[in-house]
Image (cartoon, rainbow, N blue to C red; front, side):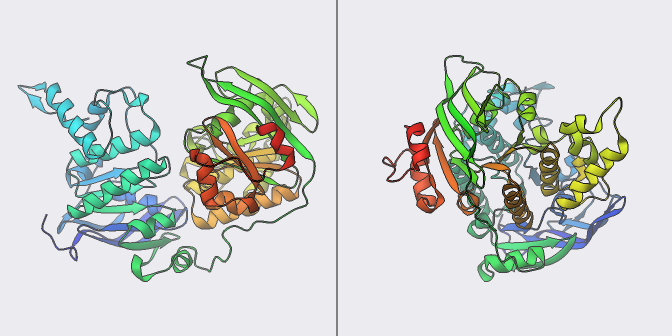
Length: 523
């Protein structure tokens, strides 16, 4: 524990990894010092995930070239257990816990303390409770994981790593599913680990977090190592230029179009909890979205943003009341199939769990919601291929082939596949829930340009986002939700991050300005 901060705890030297037809990493090197937070940045597809999978033992020895050195000793990992035994703990963006087991069982999974060949459950519970207290989670260690929120589950993963006395903690997009309070807890944990000389490899597309937390940052681009810089000696623009290989002048390429008539209207929408039929998770919400605009929806985690959208498209089990009006016509939506029929497309927050079928090809995913277009008595294979090729080209999806499984694509390209699926349905209304979550900065800009093009073509775009710069940068009007209700709706010129947070937290007074078409509906 007394090692010098200038000494390396981990070295990955000349790492090369090839998949069929693709070289994911080419002669990549990474050096991490004792007690430092070392950020790894790069676009989607840059090789970050592949590098981490090698370090964590998912890609075993023999499947790549290069060497791993941990605390001065050359290592060869045959599996994940070997990596963990070497003091490396990896926490992925997707939760790896077993939902039906308790928190304590997950923390000690495969490592349960024994007493006379019998698991010492009292010790399991006590030690697990201690680990939870260390990361600031106030829950019983015997609680089933499935009863916890995503953010709490992520902190349980960290508690599990600390209990194993990890010397190197790898965090892959750790704040993607955390609330603001949970992010503060995570940052405190990381800083505490730094004082204990534990190294942290921090992978994030959120550059503000990199500059707040990291000591050094290494950049990968197209599977190659670009360089390592002290965070104190580089600007955000310089880091972006290292990541994308060019100057990215405009992150939010917002275009302003002539606002048209309201084409999508929701009146008095109320969504009830499927488990507790008397509880309203969305309460008497009304709003309009017009042609020629992007309507942004902001709010804290639990404010009801996603539930509002999933309720109106018939994707929730609870009772839903209210009206949906498209182009002046009242429509009845009882299921997502009805929503598709009326021209509503929905890109969900969880693209891997709900947006795409990972085991299917790019071609199959893009055409999945539009089978009527390519199906007569059988699927027209040539038309299916033609449509998939068209959207792969239009969206600039990076894939060796339209037959590539979506699970093998980077997060940004997976998101583009999901968007392509809905574009093929000729959606009149496209709802994007956290469209840039877990996506690198260059792909974000591409998706923003696609949003502009859709608005220009006459598509109504509704965007839910937890990133306030994104909401302010791309929205024409902004709705702020709090506790299942709309707190305010106003033009973006009337809003800033401070105002949005005041309404989101309930600390703001009645708005000084609300557009006339919204005022009567929101009171």
